Length: 140
Image 1 (cartoon, rainbow, N blue to C red):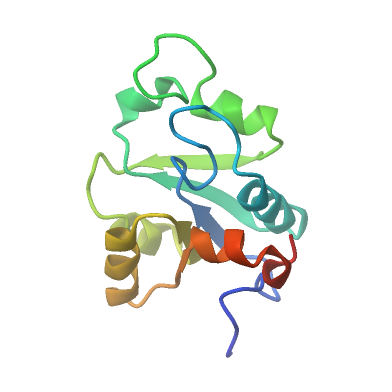
Image 2: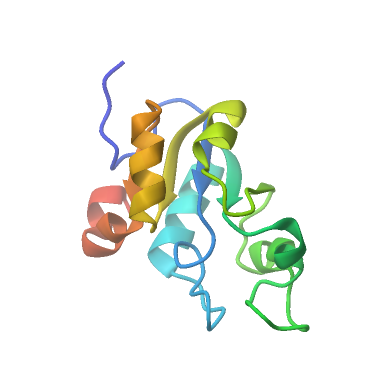
C-alpha cells in the first residue's frame, strides 16, 4: 500500500511522537499545538498513540526538564487530551528498536539523527518541522 507521510494512514494502527520539542517545548512546557492537534486526529481515528522519548525513565517524572514540580509526562498528556497514550523511554538510545517492537507505522520527531536512524531501519519518520511549515498538508 503506497501512502504519503503527510496524511494519517487509512486504517488504525500505531503512531508515535517524540515528546521534547515535538509535542512540548522542552523548557517552557507549552504544547506545540500543530503536533498536539495531529496526535489528537490520530487518536480520534482509532490509532494507538505512543510517545517514544530519548529521556531516561527517572527524567519522565516531570514534564519540564530539571524541575521537581509540575506535571508528569502522563499528566501533561492528560491535560492536553492525548490519552490514552503509552510512553517509552529510550534513555538516549536509538528509538528504532522500540518503534519496531511496537509496530509504529510513522514517528514524528525533531531530532535529525534519530530520524536518519529510523529511516535506515526501514521505518517511517517525519520531521516535525514539516508539520509546522505546512500544517494544512497534515490536516491540522
